[in-house]
Image 1 (tube, rainbow, N blue to C red):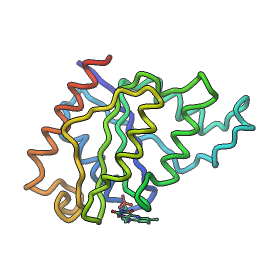
Image 2: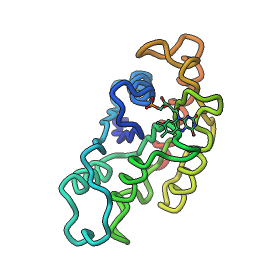
Image 3: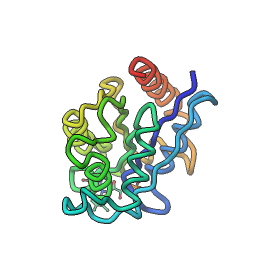
Image 4: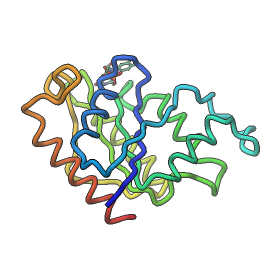
Length: 179
Ligand code: FNR
């Protein structure tokens, strides 16, 4: 079954571990699943005054989410929460009120950090946001990942491959249940 999963990466950093993880995860899926990574770096700060005439970058983001079967969030943890760039993107795509692009889209949440708790706090905060946005979000398996363990350069480290394959299989099953 062909699927399109929109990917939102919560880091703008050129050598982002989360961007590498997002690419590596996409490679674990069957060929008929597309993982377009959505740009969020050109979004202005969300301003409710612009709701009736949203910026072009926000319209583009919402359109891409609407066209997707699911949304995969791959995010670092900043100060025990979600990075502002990701929250800004979520705010844009959820507005104006009643016109959210997210409603009903099956979500996956995963992230990698250099810290021992592997983005657990950020993921919990994000899950609260996604619940409000009415996104059914995969609950298990959880994936709290540490960069040293999970990545070997741009690739998934051998010792983490099986677990991440299990995670990806579970997420794609979750999406198929909801499309
Ligand atoms: C961090 N980092 C971090 N790590 C963590 O495990 N918990 C945290 O609360 C924070 N807080 C935090 C705040 C800010 C502003 C920065 C820049 C970084 C470290 C973070 O895990 C590390 O920079 C990762 O490499 C970020 O992910 P990317 O950019 O590699 O995808």
